[in-house]
Image 1 (cartoon, rainbow, N blue to C red):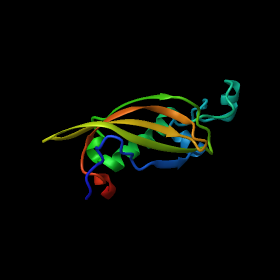
Image 2 (tube, rainbow, N blue to C red):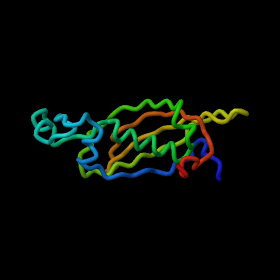
Image 3 (cartoon, rainbow, N blue to C red):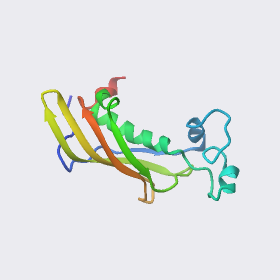
Length: 143
């Protein structure tokens, strides 16, 4: 098992997903019609179509962190991001991250990162920072 990425400037392996309306609906209460689940409601609100809820593409950031830092990164992660642009069904969203610093002790490492998701046009749809506890890299791959 390789060591998790903690060196400043190192980039994490990106996670990409194509957003679908079917998946967008899963992030909302069952049967709810709103700007995240219904094109007509979204258009009435001035949007071009239904937009993905921010938690949907934030989950891609968590998946990226989990893949790199293992299960320890799931609890205790501090994520501070801002939504910058809407995500529509059919968009490809890629979560990316870059280490900005780390503190290593006998108990492990606390890693600071710049994180963002971008769409297929390279627009940042969310951007911000994360702090994670670094476990063994790839520790979550077996689950």
